[in-house]
Amino acid sequence: MRGLALTILTCLGIMSFSVAQELEFDKSTHDFGEVKEEDGPVSYTFTFVNSGAEAVQINGVQASCGCTTPQWTKEAIQPGDSGSITAEYNPLNRPGKFDKSLAVTYKLGSKPQSTTLYIEGIVKPKPKTIEDELPTIIGNLRVKYKSFNMGKVTDKELVVKRFDVYNAGDSAVTWLDSIVGPKYISVSFDPEVLQPEDLGVMIVTYDPKAKNDLGFVSDNVVLFTDEQEESEKSFNVIATIQEYFPEMTADELAKAPKLTFDRTQHDFGKVTQGNKVVTAFSLTNTGKSELSIRKAKPNCGCTISTPEKDVIAPGETVKMEVSFDTTSRRGRQYKTITVFSNDPTAPSQMISIKADITD
Image (cartoon, rainbow, N blue to C red; front, side, top):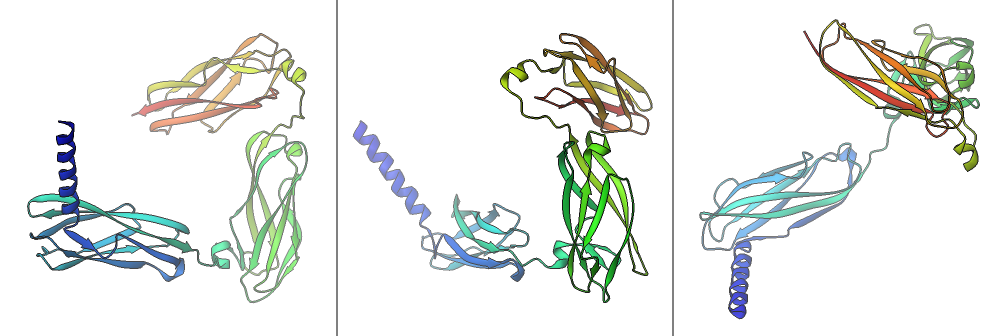
């Protein structure tokens, strides 16, 4: 019996292989090699012959990616006749290696069949121009963004970052020795006189300690040039500030404060627009020394959070009330409050509130 079963399975395998061979493709995989992004789409046509005794009708070709567009022979292919499937690949904004497949479904007489073709290659990215690198135009100058992102910083020391600027005009641009903005932000220029088609830098120095804030912060600065038009250049200076904690020993960490919440989320459910809803979170100091709440910072002016106390003794629990004003809000709302403390292991922790606002 076991031998009979093996014989049947072998015959079925031969039959399956025979069916798969009714369409004889020139090849099942095409390697485009290196493709230049700037040259646009590339295509390859797979050709096949119907080597069977019945007509073949291709029902469809499904690409594994929207970047690949297939075309194929729509009419039935008679025995001995040939057909084709063309795969076009668009390399725009797709640098690096690609491997894509095309699932081919067809009928052999009345029997549904399928096979898979593959394309591959490597897209060489087009060289970036100044317009690509610095797309934002302010007067005659090109910059990447209208903002200086200082990134994640601590309040330990000054942060200095350099930002490219390009003179796209026909005459030199001179930076003037003036800036409108907070004292903890300064900007210098290299060079101070930027010639046409020259690249320079704006050097931003930021003092997080003097800013005296935590979390995401944003400030506006205005720079000036000698251009006759758009001589004022307005930028946002953004940063995410964390309190600095020096390295601590295991013994110091064991004696440190520790902030723990009773929960980190609250869902108000359905709330009628215009109402103010309130909940309270419990904050517990599970550490061994005093816990200081530096700041509770919502991500929206519609949310107010107020801890009962700023200093929490070891083992003590206090409430923090969170209110949400739904005025002018609609639909599903998600707001966060970041609580900053002197817990060295988790100096910033986030809690959230949710609500479905209805009319």
